[in-house]
Length: 286
Ligand SMILES: Nc1ncnc2c1ncn2[C@@H]1O[C@H](COP(=O)(O)OP(=O)(O)O)[C@@H](O)[C@H]1O
Ligand SMILES: [Mg+2]
Image (tube, rainbow, N blue to C red; front, side):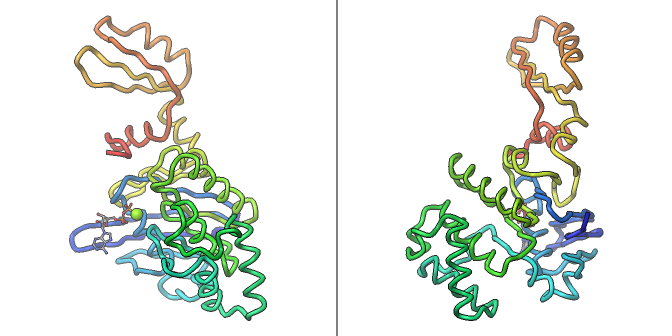
């Protein structure tokens, strides 16, 4: 497997705060890799370093084999980035924004038109091409941002919270687009604070907590390590308590052993929220 991202003890300090601390990871060609963590965990800072928008305080990172500090222009050639916040000109149309990007990448006029037409179709924006960004819904704005980031056919795409604020239906359509891109050969590095998004979309997930990587594996493996089944119990007037078990036999034994003070018992499959809770003592949404 070809390594498209590698970091070694990557760190970024703002004042006294380590936004990212000793991050070491690898992302391989063909993956949808997800960075899961609550607000302030350091996700955007990591993306900003990897996409050459800011420099690390210490440690190193390579994208496509190029050191992000030493060869930023090489890195920029091979990556596409969709930033967390609107990065397009709101007063321009989708097509005009794409035109601008294409010019930045030195496309010839004829080539430019062809590429834009093809991309508009790909992301499903053909009939919205001549509307301004401001006139589009949140979901369509995200599509326009993705289209712009794909102009130069990058093999690696960074998506910073691609579905934040979108309704469930629009979010699922965005997942379909991300999966389609990935099936067409684009490696994806995305960040999210949505558990279901990481579980549904990502081949591997890194869990980030206060700037540090506290776990990294396939979603199923992360769940397996804590236990595939969760039992939530509540005693009268008490808080919920969580316990995890590898199989249903272990769950049944535990449930039978519970005292009568337990008023509520919920048995369900574990999820990445449970993984985060077990590792940090807090929920991703807290
Ligand atoms: N330019 C900056 N100056 C000072 N602090 C920053 C800056 N950017 C981010 N931070 C801080 O670094 C931490 C990580 O932020 P960020 O990477 O944006 O997290 P996330 O994207 O996971 O929400 C936060 O505590 C944030 O306030
Ligand atoms: Mg962020």
